[in-house]
Length: 320
Image 1: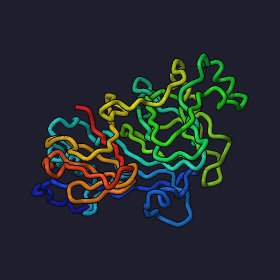
Image 2 (image 1 turned 180 degrees about the horizontal axis):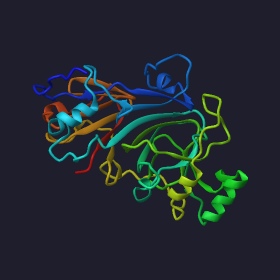
Image 3 (image 1 turned 180 degrees about the vertical axis):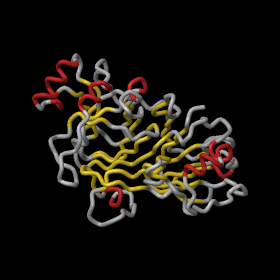
């Protein structure tokens, strides 16, 4: 591999990455039809676009071929700010999900269980950019359901009856901490912000087969070890006055609609356009686009202008 000298680079414009599209048995084609993205082929169901990814198996790259990991490793202060975490990899993974069928009922392991289960903890949040009429999400347990009730439902094939159901609407946001049982229902286009992890334990998958025609693997014991059996009937997030949707130890996500500056010089903010289009730093970003505003970007370049009154976008920060 040829090592490039990037020490001379300056960062005063939005950094964009090529999305990494992933086929999924429950996926579809709406990242193309609704967002205008170019999918890798004309037939396969694509369920995920990994838009900002520093996974060893899936590296986001810029137009000039630089990876997110290179930026994180060699330009951390200039791009991500002096207060960026001292971690081996960029700590978040940002995706768009196209659910044309129900996802498996699943859970991500909490930090105190992940190591012994040979996995990684994953706390995440969902912003629903599009919901078909009648679409639903599953999150948490119905009030009063015990572990014994859960295992009995798993045994007799009625697991969906003990998981809390929420009617999904466009613009809703849901927080999914590690340990919360959950599933995305059919008919949803979702922006997902999560810890940099790819550990998912499926406890029930609707008795279907994967794209290879074989039953998909289940992780029942790992799921039972990970599920928070005191987590009953969570609701959607309330949008705070400053646009905050979720603020936790891993990420700070806000919804914005009005023109104005994004952050200050010295701060790294990722923008994800969920409707309409914006202009920032000399580029136009459309729905489905993500762009990282580097810490060294000057104040004038941080001014965001929405194209019309329907435009909205997410601001994503790593808490200091």
